[in-house]
Length: 228
Length: 331
Image 1 (cartoon, one colour):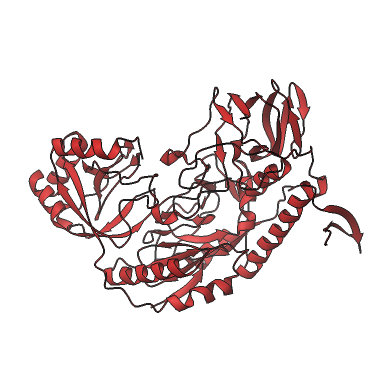
Image 2 (cartoon, chains in turn blue, purple; image 1 turned 180 degrees about the vertical axis):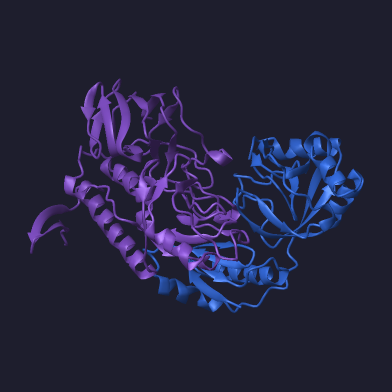
């Protein structure tokens, strides 16, 4: 399916579906990339199943923008496997205060929670909500856990967590209600880079368990020139 | 380099330019001024281009000491004094070293702007000087902060915006484009939204304006959607039935159904409705929304040229209608 809708006077939505589906998202990424590469003066955002094209109504009328994007709706999905991005995580301890709860809620040991979390390959479906916040698909239902009853006022940048059937990280410090199971020493959001996030929609993510020593080593290297 | 010192701030006071474009796909909102008409006019008054960084405040303004001669202006309906004497907003004024500007309360509206000829000097983050507190792109200003102003070669005169051309608050309904999640609402719900009066609550800020009024009814599809994009001005309706309008610092995505998106041309009017103020909504189609926007932009471009001395303006009355005519000389 494919239909186009105006969303306000400065954006259109190219809708391919209404669910979390890898095939649909691959098609979304292909169309989004094609429009980005070929149409000047617009900003493209892809979500689970929709491509948004933001434009200036002084430069484009609604009919003009439809005309501009039309050639790219038919683009063949690239059979791209996407980059695999490995994210080192120090699980548990002070950096993962909720890992015990995730384990007991699911009747598992903490080691098994870590084993399960690190054995999946997750797809980045979209970024949003906060800078660098990634929506990952593919969390093993065995470790799905409801959000905190009372959100924390401050969750540290790099915190990795679980909420219902979602997993991901807080790229910047923020209030949050996710179950925090660990922390990554990587800068998940970097203002000094032209591509400010560590992952992009379409990437595949693998978490890798590391120890305290490796965390410090990577952290010193990543953050030596100040917070993002 | 010319310098000003913030002696005191009395509300959230931040540096803004026209926003951080191009990073929505990374989860970074555009930010920028809540009322881009007032901010641009403030900049035009001091000979700046519209994207020059300036100060935005909410409700009550800061106290500023000028350390050097600087041309400044204020955009908004503001009670202010310069060295104790009343000074007009919507006009530019020369300040001398030692002058103290006390930007007081906003008489009508919420957001006010203070512009300096040359623009505030800042180190852009991801291409923009707009403050986005959530991600620590810049920070709220406070007493003791010293700001450098970019030196300008050109010297501009003190000018004012003629009364007839000022953006006067009107109490017309806010125009919106319905959707994209209309299927999440019943006919009754949509009708409620378009025929009721909503009050801006005090839980309204740069991220979003929370409104209170007759509850908007969802259909069996319910009050959750698969997380999706939120354009500026999107009106979300969560389970409690009260609409929230996404504003400049609003998140780029969200999970509540979007009943409508505010027409770009009416965003400043929502921003300038204070807590306790009332809003009604009216549905229009995209062609009308875009034509209104373009018409406004033509007006802004003409006003900019007029203020910067490039064209002349005349008021005429044709068949009982008062019109402003801008005259441009052609070679």
